[in-house]
Length: 190
Image (cartoon, rainbow, N blue to C red):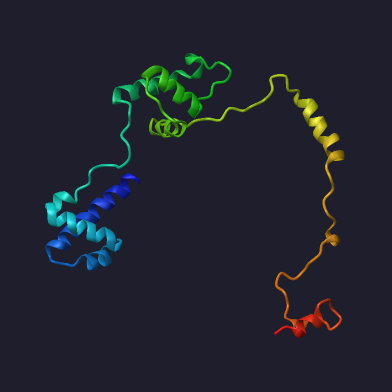
């Protein structure tokens, strides 16, 4: 949820508390604030037990970050140094898998690839996907092969006049010609 979404949710809860104080029923609160009745009834229960403070936001949901703010600063500095500074010399690309490995090596904390991706986005980085190319690739030979050999090997498409159409819904027995297969059998069914 975005920060704007959290602020709206907080504002709606405060409005709900004000309506509950005016003895407005939860179903009517749900209608007025355009929230689900289930949410309104849950908020009403919380409000009855703890007042407006019980409806206050407890911050963003989800798991807490396993790295301290200081470790996050260090991680950002490591990412700024580039992959080669940390042993990945084949290309200058931070992949999510590499970042997860780096976090494990430097901070002894295990992160999944998707968790490393979210952490990178939080720090203002985006994971990259390295281009997989053979080091000995000859671009001129590839271009020539595509122009000559591929054009010969590629199967031609179906000509425009060779298409056919058929019904997708079976017609009624009355619509069938009398000489059609099964036409006489359909008349004997009951």
